[in-house]
Amino acid sequence: MNGWESFLIAEVGASAALTGLIFVGVSINLSRILSLPRLPSRALEALMLLLTVLIVSSLMLIPGQSSAWIGGELLVIGLIVWIIFVKIDTDNWRKTDVPYRRTASLLIVINQLSIVPYIIASALVLLNGFAGLYWMAVAVLFSFVKAIVDAWVLLVEINR
Image (cartoon, rainbow, N blue to C red):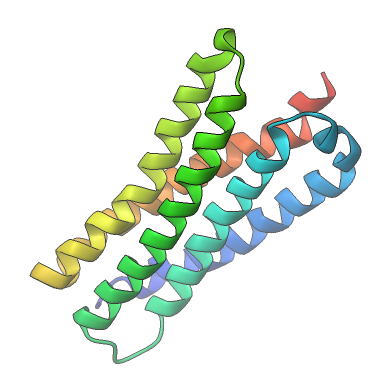
């Protein structure tokens, strides 16, 4: 875990700040968000991605953990979040009109790129030690990208 502490501390702070931004966006535009069928779940996904980064980074900052513990934490969190996202994305896909399915598909792909690397990281950490954490960094970065795009939609695009 040497060398990861600074990265994890930065991710805890960034995810907490972005979570606050999403909450502000949702509170400012709550009635508009609730009036559009898929936006409440999009806000939930953004919050879940940032919460996942916050929880994973916080847990990994606990000193003295073995690679087995960290791999197990990543696996449990990754699987729980993945199952929730598959359910949300499947429901959204079914409700999406055909002309908008291309955009919906892109959002699903970005969600998967944000979550599946946690599961890959967990397997690699369990098998090969802390070198698998680079996949966790990929998950964190994709999570930030998706959450920021969602924040933009919830704060700006919703009012166009």
